[in-house]
Image 1 (spheres, one colour):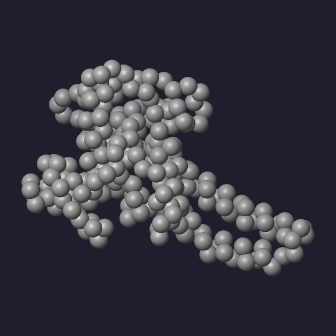
Image 2: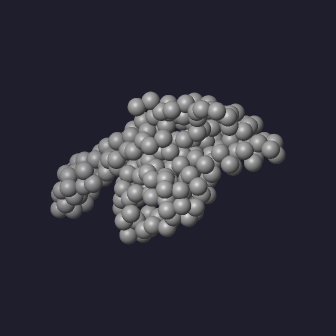
Length: 228
């Protein structure tokens, strides 16, 4: 059932994630921290004679470091996913194709953050812990005021959302998270009027069948705040 405290999650390179509750998480930069060590190992590998014993030993060292980077990233993703489920009952994220973003000028940083993997892990943890997960339209989440809905255009250099219409002011990424949350609530309220919604767990590891969940309108009144 869709009920309880909703959380909108905005991910990015400036901050790994920002939630509608005001939680900000810095990007850990897994690959960048070990990039110099990886270059050294790869340079040594290039000097070895192929198919020799020394070549195989060095190749394994490179492979182990790649494995270490992947495991560190995945462990961080799982911890953040559990933290989101601890903080709320409904988690909403943007419906973005991160493979397209990874081809741009910030491609290396996008791949290092692993946003696509993170979203998949959040879906899985939400399903496993009985939380609701939803994806919303990503268009204009950083260009809209979450309080009055007015358009507030700003480029990437502007890191503070300041609405000229209602004077609401907050961190730019937090405002985006609040817009994601608002769109998620509207989406499940609309679906709740028509009947059933398919759970977002059909493409997750270890899940054979997609389950259906009936959603209802979010309860009125005060919502549970995130413990700091």
